[in-house]
Image (cartoon, rainbow, N blue to C red):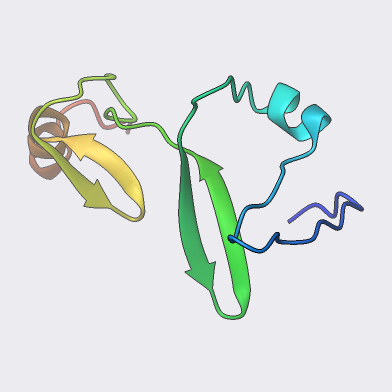
Length: 85
């Protein structure tokens, strides 16, 4: 994990402002969604991507290892289709 050097204070209603250069680097436009994860005592924010990581399909999704994957790609992986070697 890379240290950014940014420290921000949470306001009275729980809001936190993300620094502009982080929003630019991650292409987080206004109204963009982020996901929250807890890793021990750390809060991890990640740009939300609701589609399959392999084919970008946004239907019949399931989570695998913290990533979205569609049913069709999961079946391909299970059958060994497309594997190298």
